[in-house]
Amino acid sequence: RDISWEFPGAGFAQCAGRVPEMSVDSKAKEQLEAKLLSHIAAGHDVKNTIAFAAESGVNHPNKAKLLNDVVKSLKASRIVEAKQVNKQTVILSKEGKRWVKEGSPEYQIFMALEEPMDKKSLLNKMKSLGGAANPGMSECMKRRWISLDKETKLIRRLIEPSTVKDEVREQLLKVQKGESLDVKVLKILKKRKMTGTKKETWYEVSKGKEFTVERKALATDLTQELMKGDAWKKVEFKEYLMTTEPKEALVGALHPLMKVRTEFRQILLEMGFSEMPTNNFVESSFWNFDTLFQPQQHPARDAHDTFFLGQPQKCLKLIDEYVERVKTMHEKGGSGSIGYRYDWSLEESKKNILRTHTTAVSSRMLYKLAQEKEFTPRKYFSIDRVFRNESLDATHLAEFHQVEGLVADRGLSLSNLIGTIKTFFTRIGIDDVKFKPAYNPYTEPSMEIFGYSKELKKWIEIGNSGMFRPEMLAPMGLPEDVSVIAWGLSLERPTMIKYGYKNIRDLFGHKVKLDLIYNNPLCRY
Image 1 (spheres, rainbow, N blue to C red):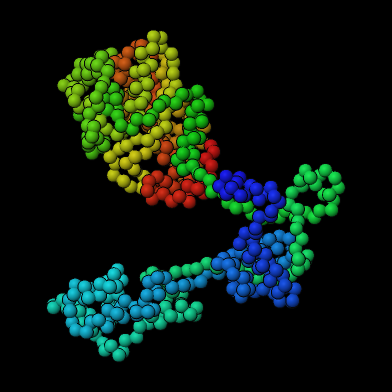
Image 2: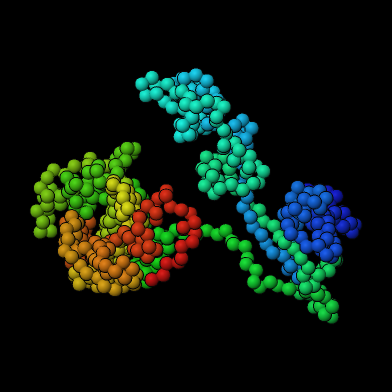
């Protein structure tokens, strides 16, 4: 960066040929390197670079770290041999240091209990201990120093003060002095947040194959200036350490669901499907239920299964002509149907909800298709989030992702639906597919889809399918000879199988670990 704008004299100083002053870090590194090489040249190996830096006399707050950097550089030049040593040291926490000075919480509570008193009074007397008061009292009782009289509700001493020994403080003092303690004792102190760990890294250093007291400046790049003449022949180049691992780059990572979603999306695009816009999580009951010929008394429309919005409670606008045709189909029927024979409510259809399926989007797209002057066959798909008022368990969430596909064309039959489904599932690794008759309010015939999972080695339900009913298509204005086949599945189920998850909450939700997302492999079918 050109700093002459910030410091007016900087540009002039460079033009005048003045050499910039060496940085504090560079100067300290130079001093540490000279002392280290002189020490080794005198026949002394360095056992601990941290201790050596402390005794070097170099004035720098991070001299131990700087010396480690110097050693790595010298090792790369084969001037020294260096062995890295890592050690975790147990140290006192802030609380631990306090208990060393004042005594452990249990010891302080015991000494404060000069006469019997109730628990509230004792805790009030020891409020200076803060959150350590209750655990301290529990430790007193555990050690049988004090007891609670169940009748009087008073706490009293069980032993004399002269017999009490503050073992916890003695253990903390040993930690402070760097003395060893039993592993179980250290575990208890850590659990009580009295100790922590400090990681230290240092090097053991000795002479290398090309040891020298004064290091030569090695060229790191073959520059244009060196190539002009024979200068490159006289220059000594720094060797590249091909075995050195690069620093891990902190890059973004896709969630496993998004990896599977990307793969599914690519497969559907390759099959000739177009993606539907699914950016409206909030949907009216009209588009989510009524257009699908789902009666207003259906259990799925109950608050136990659907999330209704408190504000805004109702949608502002619907397509009047289409609403009237849907109402007629529900009340009186049509296209060979007698309808549901009930009084259809416009107010009920205006209620806003969090969409329970992406079929609401399919309904919008089919209505839009019906408004075109001339019908053109279409293949649509969508992959997005839906919401159900479900009881949460290992396989169910209140929000999940739905994969949906549909084909609108003339002359379609159940065999077309089965063929399309088999093609898709074969592409995602499920070659063996079976179908079972089922019931859906808006498809007839309807089928549940089962696939044999090679990972789980059993048959599992993987989706639902069917042909949209004439009662749903006729009010939209689609030609009578046009049929629509459709199928859907959740995104979570195949992802759980692909990545070996047994609990859906480990895959999606607030309990998901970020390192799990970062370390998962790519999804390929």
